[in-house]
Amino acid sequence: MATTRQPNDPQRSFNETQENTPKNDIEGQQTPEGLEIEVFDYSKRAQWLRAAVLGANDGLLSTASLMMGVGAVRTDIKSMILSGIAGLVGGACSMAIGEFVSVYSQYDIEVAQMKRESRATQTELEDNKDLPNPLQAAAASASAFAAGAAVPLLGAAFIKDYHVRLGVVVGVVTFALLGFGSFGAYLGGTPVVKSSLRILIGGWLAMGITFGLTKLIGSTGL
Image (cartoon, rainbow, N blue to C red; front, side):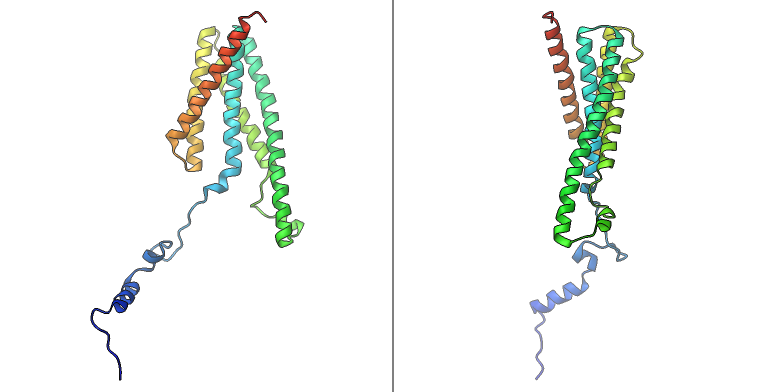
């Protein structure tokens, strides 16, 4: 004898609900056309983004702080510009070498791990785009450092008056810090205002401490 379901059978109601529910509502990963929604992974940008943002901020702050420190004890424009140029060249080389060594060490570790797990050939490892690229990271870091260091140099290059020159350096560095912070936050998918203010306050502290300590040491007659 065939069995009949009661009108209020919970199992039947559940099955009918599942059948009538659109697939994309259940899975939450498909468009109405049946295409999968691609969620961008911001971690893929981490390697070059970290090198570029850190390089730009380091170039901007270290060069500006160096120029402010020299400007605390020397009023002539030549001393500030030469110190800024020396900071740009030395800092860019240092950043490139440091980044190359760091990323190459990470590359060696990941390659060794892949060989242990999958016994991949050298050709397959070289074609693997997910592995870190030491040359790319070094170039990005050095270029970003030079770009950041050029900001205070250009700001002070054509200002003859001492006090105006110091004010211009602080002003252009402030706008550059806000720009770098906003750009990095946008690319990384993080809050723009919070990231920008964090970088800005850190930059002001760096310039202020360097200027103040150099002024204090210079006043002792050393």
